[in-house]
Image (cartoon, rainbow, N blue to C red; front, side, top):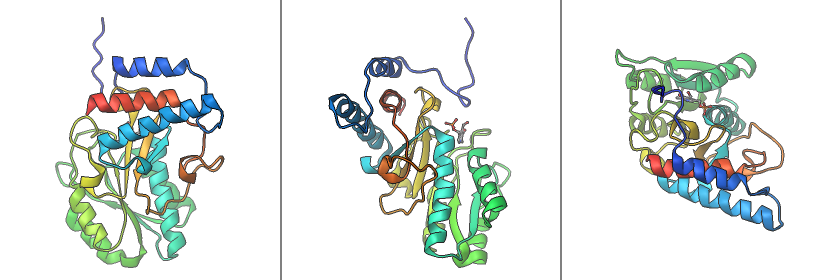
Length: 259
Ligand SMILES: Cc1ncc(COP(=O)(O)O)c(C=O)c1O
């Protein structure tokens, strides 16, 4: 038997999550359909939303299902940047820590290369902790131009925990929203949307013993967010696409077990 050790890359699916996933895979139904099978699938999606929200200290209506952490990060970075600039065209500056995962760094870089944004990478100290003085300086320097700040909760390479509540305090004092990627933190340290005070929070299933291909962006109802995917208008119009009831159920069960 081989020992699997790289839980930072992905995790084995927990038995309870695998059972929940398999049970649900046997049931057909599009959660957006109005007939009985659709309504049954919708019920599973909404119960899973309640379950994940409870684990994360969020309201069910704040959970937006995605295909994983990468999509949730893209939705947060691009969606916040676009919505903030729509409110005030001066907001063209995106502040991200220099040690973010590429799922944050690359959408920010894309905004810089294709969308006229100025991306500022916040430096970190010897232990990989974002320098709050540099954040304060950047917020002062760019003032009304700052669209958003994105600082992860736990680093995927060295494990550094970031002072996200301090980041939130600095950014919110200037009315700037904060996104945090909690992909590597969930199941390891407490991750509470309400306590952290962030405006958007990324989580993904396959790092906590759930199936791959599903994740979520937790985002406040009053937070303006431009969609990245357009289509059927699912997930309050922010993330179109047919939901997979089996995947979200497997994710919610895993989150319950892992946290
Ligand atoms: C910190 C961090 N963010 C985002 C991701 C991407 O998540 P996903 O694999 O669900 O797309 C990862 C995956 O390695 C990660 O470690």
